Length: 424
Image (cartoon, rainbow, N blue to C red):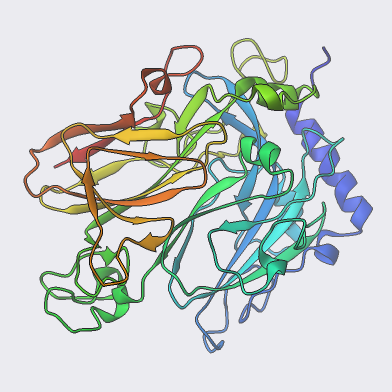
């Protein structure tokens, strides 16, 4: 097999792409109210409305598994702050796994710009891409991301999505073009919305539900935030962490890398992960180093060669640390394509307060929360779980999949769906 040199190929494709379209600025068009220079950063402080903006790219790159196996991926990358003219060149091989987290407040107006930079490792592909905010009540299908009823974006161009954010909760977003392939390849990410109650406190004005500290609250009993507009303080939390459960089928990714037929019928994830990592990488703070080719030179033929031009692509950790007595909110999402996942945390009780970005409350106003030792959910589902550590002994607790083979990977070395919750 003839192997390619990652750096040389990416540069060649970048030049070719920019040459075909004239210049990046001619096609990358960032829309953001109050942005004066096209980098998706609001410069005009007098801009009307509660606007937020992001500039994302859709492309490809490599991620490294915990057993040092480099995996070819498609994904999203964050180019917010990059001038329009540089988005394509800077966005090549910048796809992240998991994708950039989107964190919003109820009442925000989000302008989300998606630029398709192409798949530089597979220049034979010209796939369009979209963003589908899973579970969001779009008023217009044009922004829904489902290609049959909305717009998808071709290579070298930008599509600007607009969302009027009206409902809090834990969501996900993903590409909906050729959804099985693009999602399996890694076009998935966390998205969650904080409730208006963070800024207002309980509408009833009860003392136990003050303004949250994340919105400037100074009351002695103020939590960091609330999961929902509960009006009774029952979804208050002191720490939060978004954890996205997924798995890669290594045969599928290798088939894509080496231009082979994709084995859809045989799809089975053999690299279970949390936030794009297997254990013990899940408990490494911050970004993982840029991936390198393995000892066999699987990707380039050159063992140890730096991939992605040295750009780290696994930026999202799963490090969880709380002080004894604090309430921890876990924003859990399952983006796996082939199975349900069951998570448990021996020694800790989990209270389920929301599911599918909806507060668990009956029409009569009664809370329908459920205390459990494990959470089971399928692809596309999200759960909001609160762990109260008031009566929990200090120490390290494991949050992990309940099936033993999901706590490893196909090589049975480092990896698997495990992370740690440290109670100090």
